Image (cartoon, rainbow, N blue to C red):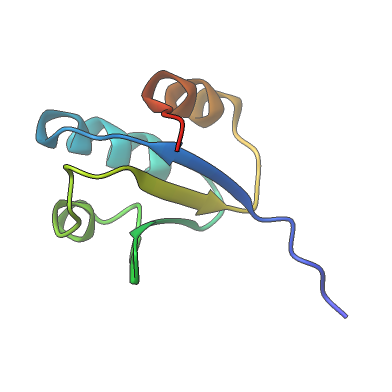
Length: 80
């Protein structure tokens, strides 16, 4: 039985931050998803991220560790 240790962080992104967010996610050697409601996209896809509702808190979900990515997400973090 596989038990997932998925990490979830809640963030807010402005359109001007999307490029940097995708760039940081791309540096990770593990899958990173970002979603709002039912819409889940690959966080390494700039078009996918722009397709989300950027006026709402987004959930980033991943199963790995990258200190730079953790630091970057902490700058975008919001409470939900």
